[in-house]
Length: 446
Ligand SMILES: OCc1cccc(Br)n1
Image 1: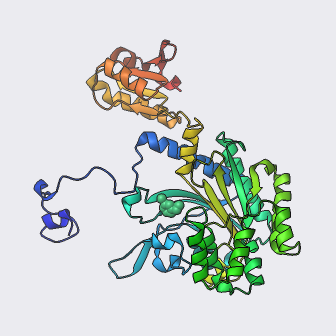
Image 2: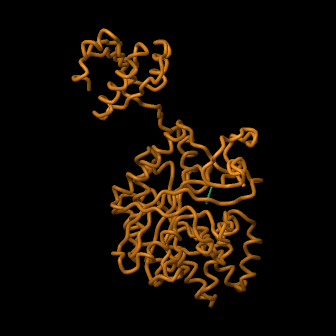
Image 3: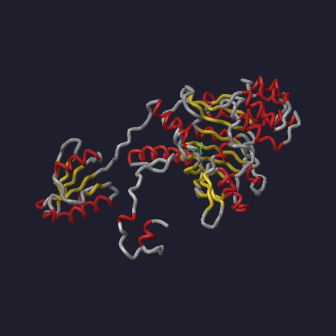
């Protein structure tokens, strides 16, 4: 039981006796392994980033939704060998329910779409921003949580949906000063693999697993990839063909291999043509090796990468037309992307594009002696009611201290409440940039 309850004789609820301090151990002031605190200076950068995410989502007409960080574990149990399942942050709650901290947002959004049922008027264009979790052995010293921006479209089967999603990410990049020379999008379609597997008579239910193995192509030796593909029962021939196709470097070459009749080629051609119309052609390139590491993608997949090749994928997404029905909903086309809050900050540091974000307060209000503290509170409220930010000095401090604080919080003005002026209903206002000082009637203060 927690220390508070123990101090209260084992009864939880309100604590009768004052806590006996020796009950508490000296705590570790660091956050749990793999997690981050956001002190003010980090929170300002996070808010700057998230405000751009939200502003882009608003520009594109998407509605914000939110879902719990804690979900039923069942939502994420997929038998496709995904990394995300091995790293699930899951546990049993006090009612013996198997629950998990969400590793991604898409399954929760799909759950909400199904819950909405017939009341959902398609297309749904939703966005959300949420903390996602994974439990990795800390040997790799990697984070266990990150915040992810997601935009998703439900109910649009056409490739215009994916084209719009990529446009929204390009819009985001441009807003923060990232250009097509800094980043690009690798684009492909899982229908390429689908058409190949069909051609070799590979059963549909192996599709997700094969994609997950192929997604590891840059991470493990090619012989390991072949071995894992072999375990799924795919023939040697099919494996050779698969590996040959994903090394194809252009849509034309792909067409030579697949023939021009399939949906994969049609979708990709349409996407590249729409990219022209949206104005982001220079940002995207075909790359048959892109499959993404989530089993549920069924069509176009894409990922944002840094052209210097120093960082992990910046963002990624694609079409997942069968996820809603897999979870028991109606057949609903869907596509979306996830954009984490970590790699993008590394990229901004690389490009020296991190914004300078100091604290900003318009006014510091200070009483010049103890018995004017109430008057200072009145002045602060007057300014705040007019929408002005005020840092009110809450205790009597020497002027030297006040000036130092004014500099630290970047105050524009210092408003001093002095006895003589206050008797005339005035305060003394010092504009800190120019040093200009004037007496102002409280009624005229704005
Ligand atoms: O990128 C996958 C992922 C999921 C949850 C938490 C973190 Br950190 N990373």
